[in-house]
Image (cartoon, rainbow, N blue to C red; front, side, top):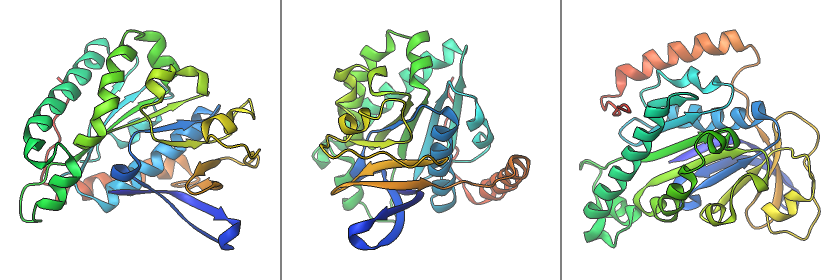
Length: 265
């Protein structure tokens, strides 16, 4: 599956293009940015675009929303299994157990396919039951880690191996120092919105070239062959209208999605 994040500008190509995020080829992802609203804007683009483009048989979301809880607007989407909020300690732990259990199940199942989800997908006909990508979102890692500091040690082995089994983690945080290097090295893809310390951009993208995104809401940087600037897409300017349209969309999608994503106990 590919999510549409927004539009990017590559001067060497002399034309803009759609910025897409491929879950399998790009893997575990960190979204940096000192503004939580901008980070949630990017997450919304990912969830919204994939909910329209793919069925619940193809992609599932489990979300730790420790930010403003704005991702609650997606809780009725058939692709969203569950959303865990601050203070739901039992669900925090149970979702982690669910992830570990799913990894063990997939590890055993994929043994005949070189232990790789992508090999399984390529070897399976469309008529067969292909199990979905599992996308785990942790929104506002600083708050998550402050409340549950011991979980970081559990995330290290999970993030090291999960992508090969079709389980992808997407984490948002305010700066590069918010996460230990041991955990951060298991994330192969980065998007950075505006940061307080401009030198962080060079560290995030391992670039000697000094580049800073323009001071616009949703403006950020990503790296493919080079570091480029992008603009995050926005669902609607009118938030109330956005909520109403998402409710209608969820009803419509529920009628055509037959797979019920398991809830967190």
